[in-house]
Amino acid sequence: MNGIEQDQLFMKEAIKEAEKAAEKGEVPIGAVIVHDGEIIARAHNLRETTQNAVTHAELLAIQEACLATGSWRLEDTSLYVTLEPCPMCAGAILQSRIPRVIYGARDMKAGSVDSLYRLLNDERFNHQCDVKENVLAEECGAMLSRFFRSLREQKKKNRNRL
Image (cartoon, rainbow, N blue to C red):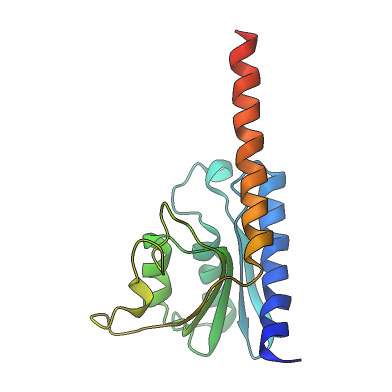
């Protein structure tokens, strides 16, 4: 399996996590962390479920990976996430020393890897990441678009009932 096929395979696993989030009424974002070709952590957004602002898919996956490896340093891992990480998640990625980040869709409102900021490649930090964007971007973006369209339709229905 070549690198592109492997990236797509693991992004599909992140998409499965995002689908779990959507089923719970969460913004459909999923993440997996891979070490030596094996998934060691998987997670999806749980902010609504937990009513906790920091339960983003990336942070939950990082916590799980730290437990799996017994270290806060996640060197020799790759993080696959369906949406470009926000500033909080980009900070956690840097702090956990993840060397490679692969994401699906860009986030023009909060993306801190390429869209609004380039935190993972800022040489002022003591760690930088190899970043690959747009892996299965259409699929990742479409899932988010469907979710938010459905939310808007539901809000409209609720307004019309009043």
